[in-house]
Each structure stands twice: as C-alpha cells, then as structure tokens.
Image 1 (spheres, rainbow over the protein chains, first blue to last red):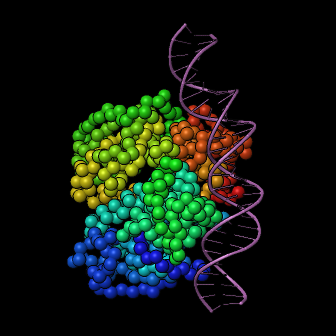
Image 2: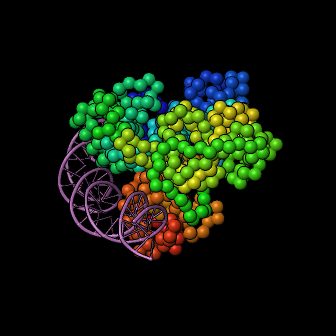
Image 3: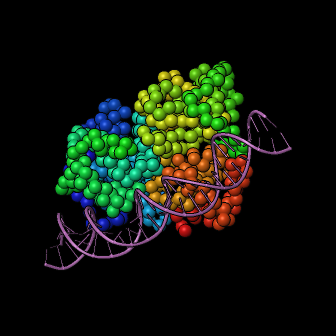
Length: 250
Length: 250
DNA sequence: CGGTCCCTTGACCATATTCAAACTCAGTGG
DNA sequence: CCACTGAGTTTGAATATGGTCAAGGGACCG
C-alpha cells in the first residue's frame, strides 16, 4: 500500500486504459517493489526472462484498466499508486472487493473472463504480464507458483475478514476496521492514515452509503477517536478505543 | 456439494472433533471424489505417497473440527457431507464464509493459526493431511501446487461474489442468489434444491437474521417462485424470475 | 470568478432487526 | 398410542439502523 499523503484524482474520464507501454532488459533488477512482490520468487539470474515479458504501464487516476467480463489476457503487478477492484450489478450498484497498492498482484483466476473490474485510484504504475507467457514462467519456476499460492491464500484470508465485516458489523465497526486495516497495510505505520480514495469508494468498499461514511467519520471526530486532516488523511487519536470498536466491543 | 436430500443433524454437542482415524496403502485409488478434488493432481503411480499421509476422519453433525485461532496443523479434503466455514466476533456474531461439500479442499493459509472455524453440517467424511507432509508433497509434485492455486483462485472468485452479495444486495436478492448457487453446485442440477443447513446457518451465510430468511422464503412461496418441501428441500418453480431477482433486476 | 466535484449535515423514510408468541416435527417415555 | 419435550421454524408487531432525498459549503481549476 502507499504511504503518500498527497494524491491526484481526475475529473471523470471513464474510458479504459491509457497505456504508455515500455520494456527494458534488466529492468526488474532495479524495481523498488520486487522484494515485496511475487517477482521476488525469481532470482536475479533468471529475472531477465520476467523482464522480457513485463510491459510497464502508466494508468491515470480514475482510469479503468480491467473491465469485468472482458477476456482475461493479462496479469498485473502494481509498482506504485493504488487501485480499486470491484464487481457491479446491472443497475449500477457496486461493491469494491479490495484496494491494492504497490507490490500487489492482480488477475488470479481460472476463467478466461475477468471476474472483476479494476480502476486506478491515483496515478498508478504497473507491470502487465501476458497470461500465456506467465504460464510458461510458472512451468519453469515452481517458486513463482508457490509465491502466487501464498498471495492467493493471503487474499482469501482478507476476503473472509471482509465478509465478516459486510455481513455482521455495524457502520461504526466497519469504518473503525477500515481505518485500522489501512494502518496495518502501511509500510511505516503511524497515527496518520492516508485515504487516497474518495468517500464513495470507501462506501462501496464497506457496503455503506457516502452519507453514512461521512456521518460516521464525523461521529468519530466528536468522540475524539480521530482528527480529520487536509489532503485525505485521518489521524488516529485513540487507537485502543478504535480497536475495541472494530472488533465489536462497544 | 451433495445431492442428498436427507440429512441428520445433532442436538447440540458443541465440542471439537470426533476423529475415528484410519489409514490404508492404496486407499486413494478407490476414492470417489478424487477426480473432483485436488488429489487428482497426483497420478495413480504416485498416489500411494498421498495415501500414506492421509488420515480418514468421520465428523458427526454439528461437530467442530477446526477452531478459529487454533494452531493450523492440517489441511482437509472433504470426501462426503457438508461443512460450514465461519468467522466470529467476540460477542458471538457469526459470519459463515462458505459451505464446502465433497471434493473441496480446506485450510489454505500462510499463517500458523487457522483464520476460520469449521463445523460439520451433516455427517462428514474427510481426509486430513499434516501441513508439513503436504509441503513435501508440493515440493515433489508441482502439479499439486498448481491445482491448489486453481482451487484458491476459484474460492477467491466466489468470495468476491459473496462480498457483492453481502455489501449490496437486498434480502430477497440474497436468498435468490443463495438458492441458485446451491443449484449450480449440485452434481446433477434439477429444480429440487437440498438445503442441509439450518435457517440459522443460511442467515449467518447471507448476513441476515433467521426471521428475515424465513420471511423471504415464505414470500417466494406466495409469489410462486418456489415450493417448500419436506426434509429441507426447496423446489424452484420459476427459474427465470429467480435469476433476474438474484442479479438485481426487479 | 463560475463551475464542478466532493464532502457534510439535516429531515424523513424503508428495510431488516428485535422481541415475542405460536406452530411443526421428530424423538422419548409413560 | 399419545402426551410431552425441545429444537427449529414461521409469523406478527414494534423498533432501529442505515438509506434516500435535499440543501449547502469548500476546494480546485479553467
């Protein structure tokens, strides 16, 4: 996830992808997120093979780069910025199933259609890998496959937590859990939590409305649990109480 | 999943496990669910190695065999019956994150504590594999690891669908989706849907209360979408309308 | 400045929950 | 055979939590 407290969002240009593509031989060697990403499963000696298949792509804020139901051609690894993953109902209701930041891997699925959509929250850089080439790499490097299984297992655990949240927690508990999850995902955790996404995104992630999210954050402010800062940051001022709130005690 | 329309449940003996253990050399060769399970990744020649590590176990209805937070020592493969997986809050609120039937694999997680609890819905037979031994098998048989990745990917997709349901669907849409999912998971789909689990389980799975589930099923009956039969079965009488209800059109 | 997004706050309302009571059905024992 | 029991389910009435509708404020950008 990102620690950046600033974030640029865009007005509303909803079309797919803007792909400033790119490639270089020893590219992955200098990649800042490799240690945290699935790419760490491949040694320096072999990383050239991976670099060959990687296409670096820039995605502007608000742009979609995966469309739910479209043919699933690529995997993605986020190198910087934040994306949101979501599913939608025909009438427009939307559920954000997760946010993914630097080091996260996207696109795991057996089906040949993407089961989810993905959109940049802020300015995103990512590597695209064709599924076919990736499959070959997996054949040659079992460690890569093991790393993907780890990644999938972790996401499964996160998904189960989110189901508990969506099915059984109150609005206050949901927002508290959300803030604490943000802290845990930070590289160098502090009381200052960056929220690069909009209230609307938070609402769609927590199964609430914008109004309820806003009201709940205001309530937390009056209760002196948090202070709401500029530039989409929140400072947690009563970690203990927020934690007991998140786990349902109160 | 199971097609059995009958099901035995038990009064209320909530303690962990009842493990009638067991082992045999060529056991897996005759296993009825192997083709559908992760064990299909291992050839007849090599299956003995798997059989050596498998411990067949019987779990009576209502018995828990995985406790949330306990040390994660084993993986499980269901050979018959149905289990429920769940997470709970300190005050007892419970979210069932999934039901698993014959052929399903449980226990994927990187952590050394189980992130979920598991309990038998009806009479369950399963194979237990120690994590350590399974890890060795994965080293020797990359196909097994690939199969597990597939399984995890599929569960991830199911989890995302469930998040959409829990976060954004109405009670009627949830129950409709639930019934249709049951049909899709059946081996030989028909209009008759077995519901081995209690209303309470359904409620905890759909993020509703027992009363709302019951009311909603009654409403579907009066709307002639379903008929409610004996022995925990439901017959779908208007598939089309139920499907459009499940996806939010109506 | 004027416009657009995004966020906040208020008043009202709807859906699902809570509380309560009655019914079904399988099992048990007189 | 039938009354008794208890878990599971159904139904009703009242309530609460979060949603809907509406208005206003603030930041950013041309």
